[in-house]
Image (cartoon, rainbow, N blue to C red; front, side, top):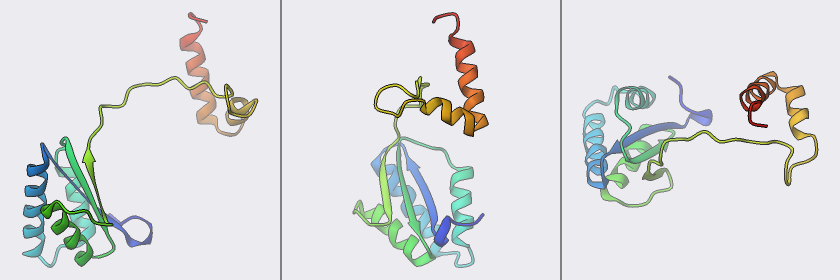
Length: 135
């Protein structure tokens, strides 16, 4: 697994509450500190592919091991950092209806998108079939 553009690697953490999130960050920091052979991108892959996604979450981003470890330390301490984003997971996504070309958009926007992007056209046609009995 490669990092994001520019060599940035995200370490994603979660816990059932703030205390659990900090404890998870502390355990990860200790684990990685004891294993200097671990590559940051391998740790990132393991975090997103083997861990549960719980209510409280944080993402530490960095271009190298030291930056990532410092970010973990800030999560453990509950301190803000420029390379850490934390918060709560939102409610699960719900379907929405989008009616392109209505309101502030330019006239014919949906027609233009359907002409340029086949996947948009197909989705628009599918919505049309699904709603045909109601309109």
